[in-house]
Image (cartoon, rainbow, N blue to C red; front, top):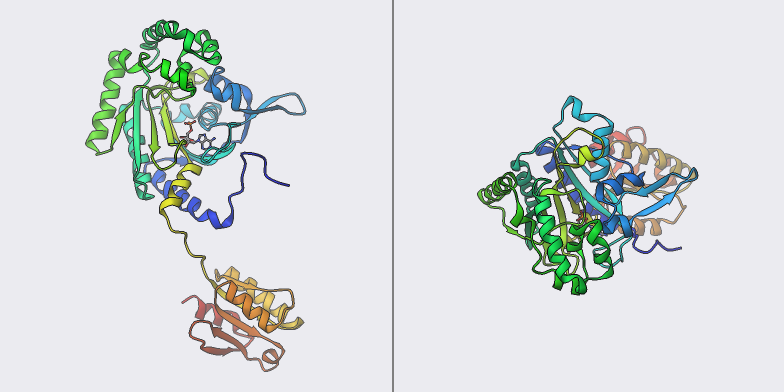
Length: 418
Ligand code: AMP
């Protein structure tokens, strides 16, 4: 049996980097006032179709959707924003305090063509903020991402930002875009042609080289912003400059989901080849209302956890295995029983203790203690028990002390906790 294509195990020897990132991200999120939220992996298909957009790559081609035994259409979440918005509305969070900041870490599922940096089950570190329209929040989220990456030692990164405008400025942009697309129709792929009537903005996402080439000179949202959107975007840029955050304005950045308004951004790295985006985010001021809540601005980002770890693997040296505090060598049935109870009590006291239950010889057990990098071994054979003199040997200094059964556990705790 093998994992499904695009799905993979993350093994214990790889997990330390994941834990390092989780620790750093959690502490930073908490400092910025974010609270953790956990959302289901499975949701009604309709949630994603309505929020991400029916005519997007994710919804049209990439979702894991199935009918359950009762015929309900369900989907493995391809991203977190829709579910967090659903939760915000479902629990009427806006009523007690519309301003909320959430983060979550967990798996997402998209049926894309697997390759390095692209998986069908992948992990995201996600942050969302509700109820704040101010551009300072846009800057703050980009600043936070920058700070996290800095703390993790990442340097080869660049932030690309754009503004996608709002419903006020969209029609003028859409009109200009449609006129432009009409003139390039003969150079576009079938998928793009199909999207002209349904969702022309998504044509700008097309990954096909010929389409990209044809769309090089396409109008940009940035050239059609209304006064409010221009001012909003100016504040984002000014604030980032004041904070010394490096960024490039990228007119062609549109992001692959329909719900974005105003600021959108992507953090790219030069060290991952084709899959260069390590994080993406944007504002979605219309989404809460679209999904049935009151008009509430929203903004968030998602970090590609797998990709982040792949970048860190290039710069971080693996941690050495944490050594074992004590290995108990129990020889014979009585010693085995006593050793079992001692080891549990030591584990309870937070002392990393292990023993072997297979009835092996002294020589084999010493080998095992070595393999587990035990700092000390406790030797309890028939003789030691009979004489009530259990031997504790420090494997580094080779020093030995003799302990009595009655006070063994507290003595060990005293010695080993030092
Ligand atoms: P998106 O909101 O789709 O841009 O996703 C945010 C981030 O998640 C991207 O910048 C990637 O780093 C990561 N990501 C998206 N899809 C995948 C995938 N199939 N495999 C690994 N990481 C992904």
